[in-house]
Image 1 (tube, rainbow, N blue to C red):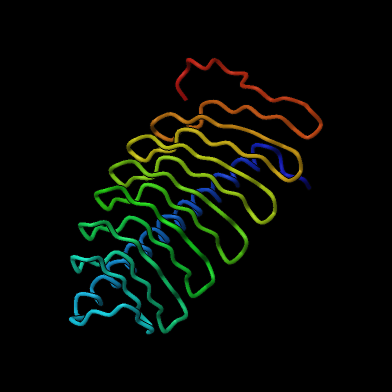
Image 2: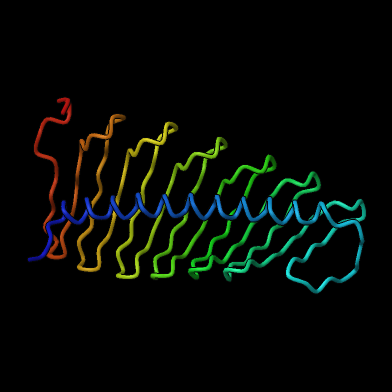
Length: 203
């Protein structure tokens, strides 16, 4: 039996929550990889124009690490670009499970944009506030479904929208407590579903 649009939206929200978790984890992995690469460099005293090894580092004229690359025994790899102060600004990783991520950080080293692809074919982008909290997430699944979520400054889900491979599309608004307040959708046959209750009423 084909799922209703409301059921599809609920499933999409669950997928988006998992993708948000994946994006957060990949951002964390990238940051950790940057730190590991930097710590490895800290123990190197010699300076070279070219280095061929499992960990590769490029320094500026002041001896500050600016680019690092490393691989791990489990098959993962990472590359990072650092600012003049040594803070990570860009990080790219490929995990052992073949998922990949790219992270852009602000001048304080705080992740602001993260993009990832998973081994099962899903892709996602996350935008973070200057406090590092996720605010906007967008995903596209291997089955063709797409979704977008928006969070308030306290990381509460406030809006979600999605399109589905079967032609349905919908959007839901939530209050600050996470309660669904408004849902609007359109089906593949062009029928439209709109709220029928008084929107001023509390749930």
